[in-house]
Amino acid sequence: MNRIAWSRKELKEKSKKILKLHYWRMVLIALLLSCFFGDGRLVSSLAEPLSEEVMQLSARPSGNITVIHNSEKQKKLLNMDKLHIKSYHIEKAAFLLTKVIVIVAIGILLLFLVSLVRILVLNPLSVGVTRLFTQSFEMRPKLKELFYAFEHNYKNVVCVMLLRDIYTILWSLLLVVPGIVKMYEYHMIPYLLAEDTDMDAKEAFARSKAIVQENKWKMFVLDLSFVGWEILNGLTLGMLGIFFVIPYRYLVQAALYRRLSGKDSVQNNIYYEGMTMI
Image 1 (tube, one colour):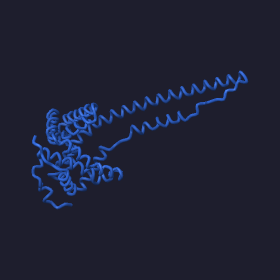
Image 2 (tube, rainbow, N blue to C red):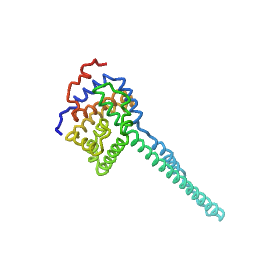
Image 3 (cartoon, helix red, strand yellow):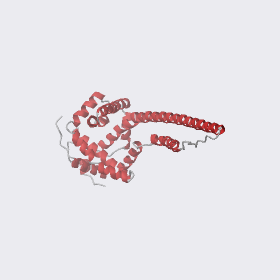
């Protein structure tokens, strides 16, 4: 595939026009996305009682007893106290071990459930998200597009997206850099599935690789350009994300796909250039 020229400035200017054209609808979409793809803290909250228990155990006095050798009776009492302390620590350790096992089991269960939700719900939903934002450059965005993959060859979408995740993880296990490279190489798979949910994995991987060829570094720099916005979003507790950053970033990524895939051949899209901005 021939290299297609593009710039961050061009993509961002187009995306801002679309965002302005459908601003409140985009805000609603961003609100839904923040709910679907929100960051949970269940595992860490379950681990807090364990850490508190460990701190209490370590802070408990060790039961040091002043040794008095004046009588056999005092020695017997001293031995009984030592046995009592030893028994207490054994019981405490057994209780703590049981608690660790329970928390680990719950953590594994939660990890399994989270993975299942990602595979069966979030991945197909991400395909619908890319479809919605890509179509926003040509028509009024429709909320129903978010669930497009659930109604069109859902099983194939799940399988292809799962393979993408598995391959990315496997490459990341080698070194960080290969994992990042492959992440960008597979970046266009959701966009391709959003157009053709019947596309098999082999074709999806090959076409995504061809689309981003010689563009991975520029895509990485494009992502870096949003770091400042993400920091501001964090400072506003996510409010800036809902009202600007989330829809803006998705639109920029959609604009990039349109350009690299040749679907944005008409640079001055009459859809938004000829309409009054609101």
